[in-house]
Length: 278
Length: 123
Image (cartoon, rainbow over all chains, first blue to last red; front, top):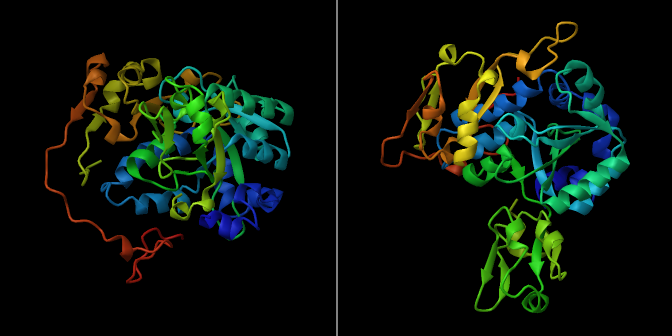
């Protein structure tokens, strides 16, 4: 259990704790600037500015701790991977509507299919008012949001929940993103710079049922192409797939791709070696 | 910005005057995306106005080129070739011996060093 759930979980995971979705939390001291910037005209300056400054904030890659602190305390925006079922619970916890908007990592780095992010209610009105040039943003209901989550899962996009600052009063979730580890800038910082607060690992890890896996795909494992973190190893001798639990982020995309039901997500805390790996 | 990376990595700098409004071109962004590293992006030079003068299209906002995650840059130079205005310069790092490192244990999570110095003062 990472410190988010210890301090703000209320007995469950931090993003499943209804206390963190209180209306007044989004206007509280530390969370208000992040909510205002993400929901207003400063969104691009905030997001792309943070991305472009990271190289200058981390001159020494052997020590990524100060960058990790900066993301949590100064930028006050960070995320965690969640599997599909938790993403659906988050949508249930949050009262609508949602704003389906572009992903900054995709649009501002040259991709064409950019509509990936679901912003929560505090940003919806201001975003539509202050950013009239974003003609592709639209307001969606809870039902549409859930359908989109399932669609993204089928296509192989990670779900991640992002907060608007950590303070003593809580961590208000602000947006669910759907991207790939090769495009998501915070995930790239996590993978290549070791910045933990950019993108935290999920609360689960994948486990393979060896019997079902051996009798399943044989030569062509279809789940492997879904793993974006290099956590899967296929042994042609055993005709079985191994998962590196230290590399697994618990996104559940391999489980969605497995045609034989051989992969399941288990709680990260059930492995003693992983309790401190976030 | 005068800057030296302690950990070596490529450094690309852009001459913003020569580049102009980046969103009208974006050839380097496209070149980097196609080459693989995907480290070149663009952002608005300053936040656009709100209200009646708010721009109606993304192209109406002045943009500049940014670089993110330069450890992923492999120094292929495709962005330099793609730039029609010659605004980009690529500087590859020189091989060097590892620099002195900060001990992890000397910094606690609150942002305060052991001797009381604030690394990220809140106020």
